[in-house]
Length: 543
Image 1: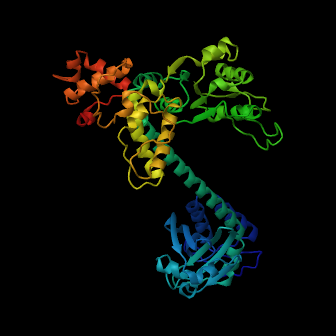
Image 2 (image 1 turned 60 degrees about the horizontal axis):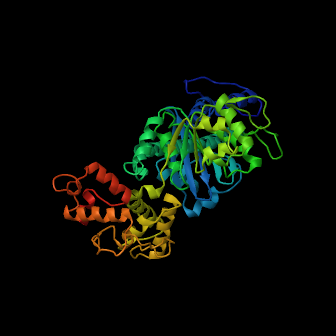
Image 3 (image 1 turned 30 degrees about the horizontal axis):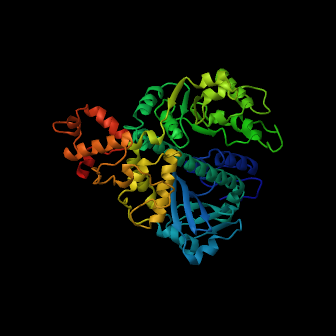
């Protein structure tokens, strides 16, 4: 073995069986650094480093690891030998009595004649990662708050590392420090990327498979809406959703996106009424570095982030006239300009807008641009309020109870008290589904694991027949004659319920309620949905 004096570096017997290498330290450092920092993949740069360094020291195996002082965990990241490099990612828990030794912040290189004689090697030996009589060079390469990096050189059996070998590898501590730091960050980013990609795939799959199931009423009160959704979703045409607050416009927009060819691209939401005027340009179109005070770097706006996907403009009626002009230009030219920018940026987006306001009236009053209105209103969809689809209230209530009882920490799913659903069905619901969800949550909080009664929800008791009827039983369907006229829908409801009771809950077929009432079964079912009268196989037992 030659002497390593810092100028020349005579190597040991190489793996080719007899090559003696004489090389200057500068060239050694340069060539070693090129291999150590040549890849972000730990197994690749470690293998390249192994083959180069094995020409100078009798290394059988190289191991790259890092220690987390907070968790007392040593992670073997990768290893390399004559068989190649491989990613290991094996965790070793350090015993309490040696954690202080492993946590030392000193950057050092140690020569260990026998692994079993060093305390920090014990977990490695126990895990089968080291032989007891292995000779080691342990090089601590860098320290950060949550990580201490270590490169371990393992000698061939019967061979011992020398102080000359220690001095040689110490010269390349810095390149190993840089490589391990970069590799650690790269691994973290790749793991996050994989997690995000997996979560995105799962989310998209769930949304696509259950779009009908998630939209309560997709086969009843919202059937016509969902038919329109399926027709327009595969296209790139703009869609304008009309509906009162709380009817589920965002849910319908999401369904359109997830049934479209853009489903794997971003779905970006913008609430046009929630952004301050001073920030709306920057939020929608982005800005260049230095465009204004506080613009420390370039920022992509919502339009750029949605490129290739769908942009959902909620509450479009709240958009100020000056911003309506900019939006119209984007829709016409399919390009934007960042605040402070000089070059146009092409964007490929599908726009879905929504509003609870009367845009026709706003156009007449000059509050909304007519050309923008027509640009957005290519395919209008009206979402009916909850009071026009009362038949959806029972499944919605069931859905909200099932969704919230675990969130509220309730052990058992609560039942509805007799008459509770009747009160909900007769109420007008000015806040629609959102108001219903809040009413259910309040009632569940107040019920304290008792049947839900909706005592303090602000729902009026009313005088209609349904307020005194349990949706579970409808036992009091036949009430005595009243001295004054009853509302027509109430009388129709009573008549249908009476027919259902006589037919044992059967709507169609021989002796069914439709035959007894001498109407078409489909027409009767439609009427029952409108009146909120339950029917179907699951409801037969009620009659």
